[in-house]
Image (cartoon, rainbow, N blue to C red; front, side, top):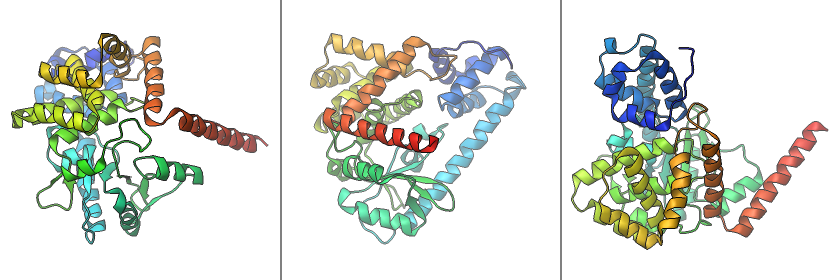
Length: 369
């Protein structure tokens, strides 16, 4: 597989959504597809779909090891998540404050379809801000510690952000992100974390809780559409597609509850964007009244919607030379600037970026001297 051919993000989406089409895919297209899927962190979903829809003999021999490797990694990571959450449960066993699993760890622990084929990274947890110090101490006693950041970065995280610096286990190298909110305290529309905790649900036979279905979607949408960098943007959109489909099928009142919760938490805009682009890119069925009510609450007119289309229909595509161009790069730059603008007020953002630039310049000058 030596020849590289351009491959659009839409082709990757089609391959994941309709894996039966992979039976007739030429080897040269497989080469591009595997490269782009790996960069988008969607190789696990692609491999899972291909192995379910196709017999081994229907796939090129050169492709099978890549799919098997992805399947092996998926199984290993699911086992590792279970192992790590077991150790986290021990860390918090003597404490009675709520501990909420977020994102991938929550999908896996709750047995949700969003975990199928998903490759995992860090373990994210949410605790009440009043218990943040106790939670950090509990993790430190079990071998996790935050380090590698200078005093300014430590103060930046602890004073303004929604999480403390990432904590890495000294022996296993696993990373825990300890949150007290889902958006920085300085962000526009930072929600009341107490409401998220109050509506969270206990996992059966577990120390942990997960967000309620509506809030799980809201968190995923907020994480994606307040983000500055979208390396995993398309993967996160597939997460949202799976969450929306499963929760909507489970209860007829889900859509009304999602809309009401998004408005109550002040996060109608990211939830609108999530529903809009999941529908447009992944054909996720979203009732029109949901889009209309969220757009109305967010104050989105036709011009604003066109501006978002210009950004996200490009920026959500895989960040790979085979599927990107100059227009995509420009859209990603605009999303990068938007994410910073949303997370910090202008004066604080200017001071923060200036401070980081001076520190970086000083370090580079010191090395050269």
